Amino acid sequence: MDRRRFLKMGISASGAMVASAFLPLAALAKGGNQDAEMQGLLATVGYEGHPLCREHDSCVVIDPGIFARNIATLRKDMGPDVKVCVVMKSDAYGHGVENLVAEAVKARPEYIGLVENREIRKVMEWMDKADMRATILRIAPATFYEAAESVVKGWPVEEVVGSLPQAEMLSRLALWVGKKRGRPFSIPVHINIDTGMGRMGFERVEDIKKAVALPGIKVRGIMTHFANAYDPKRGEELTREQMKLFDAKLSKLDFDDDVIIHTANSGAALRFPWTRRSMVRVGGALYGDIPTEMNPGNRYPRVARSFRSSVAWIMHDVPPGTPVGYESVYHTPKGRPVTLATVKVGYNNGVPSWAYQKGTEMLIRGKRFPVVGKTSMNMVVVDVTAQNPKDPVRLGDEVVIFGSQGDQTITLYDLEATTDVPDCEILLNIGNDNPRVVMTGK
Image 1 (cartoon, rainbow, N blue to C red):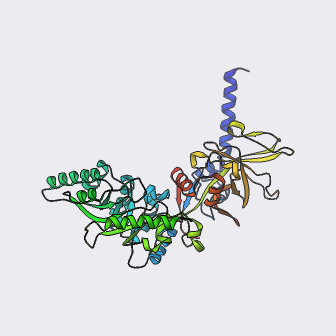
Image 2: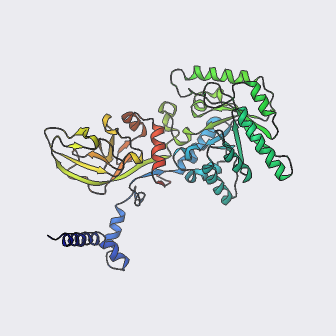
Image 3: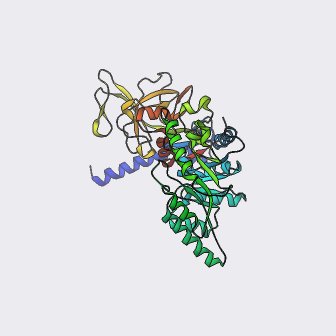
């Protein structure tokens, strides 16, 4: 057959297939009588009647209402005398700052904890539109350009200072701004003392004294960070050692009574009341990202309710011993054919490459099915041979990687156990690599 004729036939056939597949859409656009069929099509996509992931291969479902309730719960648990810093770093732990900033600001915390200016811009944009304000604590050392943007734009940001050179840099910035404005200007800071975390913080009391004496530096708080507050065995012992070292250094410093003392992260705030001091800096607990033993009765539910995708391809009667996935590290079982379903999600979306090795499962039609073969960049294969023959898996079916479907639930802790990746890391990868869909309600 002539090559050009072959190509022409192929293009013609492809066009017919596309036209056929989208006939309801075309008819609907022209005002035809396909409305009922189209509505039926749309009704099959979504979560509990909500067409959440319709436009995406996969999506994470976020519930801001849970975040708001968790902040209220934390307030109650900490008591009226303890200030709260709502930590929203790393784009709100992968949930999207823009999705949760309203709940955070409306809860009126003493501080919102952020790191990067791109996060702060999102918060400032919302606060400007809502005509509301919350003070921002940058809980990592700022670069000169980050601090400069914050100052020049008048953001309500207080900086963490953990070294004399960083304090000197902020002092120079404050003096420059004061000179330009023709009046004294100070940058509010929180002094971070290293007591065992080893990543940022003053070690020498002499350096702290030099830092706070610099012009343009105004001390608002003093802090440390605990390295082992989550450790179920030695957490209390090691945290007490850090607290003792912090207090010893603090006793050699002379700060005003209104300077805020804060040491406790989520683990310490919930486990060790003696670490709470003037304020707690809580992130993980507010997103439900804490060990189950620290969260009795699911007091702090997860804000990320589910991670969902869909079935893109089904292959029936796959022969025994057939390789599946890259490197052919997995072969279908001997002795029987199987049915495989390809899901449109992969390591690009945060599903670990070796998820299949320890029995990772996914939910389809309310039933658990095992992942088989090495995860691809955009796809992963699931063995659905054990499907209900009266209710078989179909093309386009919703797939739940974590979350609930029917009476079954797969948790992030389940994924942690079968992938050897910490649940907080899984959530960050998934949250930052997929579209986030916001919903509130049941």
